Length: 299
Image (tube, rainbow, N blue to C red; front, side):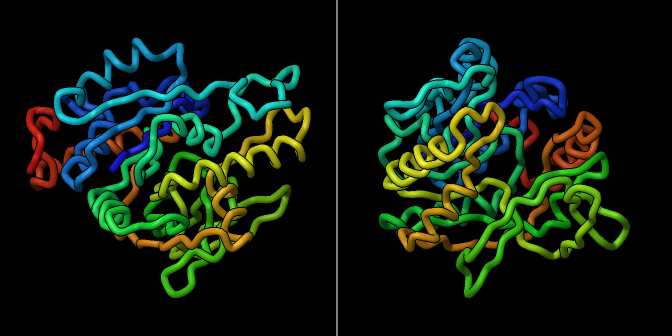
């Protein structure tokens, strides 16, 4: 099984390439925890989706940590990686979003795989759920690990989350809500000048998915449709939850939702780093992780 890590983003709100910012006293990154948990759970191949110009830095800083433990490959998200007949609109600077980032690996991933963000800590149980599902998955049977909204919020600003509707353990709908924040015992999101409540217990997508390789052809078709409908748009992006929802709406897949009670940790803002540092240090102190993650692989 493959773990596909989306690491091409620059983290504009954070102010730098946050995937390469150490988060522990031993110089480890959030990615180190993700790969460690994945290997313990049975994943035997890691594919990093990065910008091609970052390859040397990324490999020297991160990739080489794992090359003696697991197969490591790289895929490149490129602005001009587009279907035939399409070109980059004048003024477009950013790539096309997380769905296109996943498509960057379509030529090298031929087996069941999981997708995560590079700068998110998901917890061990997420990888166990993904691995268990993927070992028995067949084409069009996908999965997602969902988190409780309250466990994913930051005190340092607003966040965007895919708020999910789940019935009988399967995903029915996912709606992207931007500018979600907490105010005491409530959470709300803003649209224009208006505020709308959202339950702190809502299940949200944190871009933690399990797929079979047939997803690439389906998302490729969706990406082409997206480009046709947004011809010339220099900012809009094609997000993975949207792509999956389109496939669901055509009855071409099912998505099993596995709930995680773990807290999600991420460094959306620089001010988040201290909380994440303390949380990961506590997990090392209680024995969930060894003091030095990369010393040896657990069996």
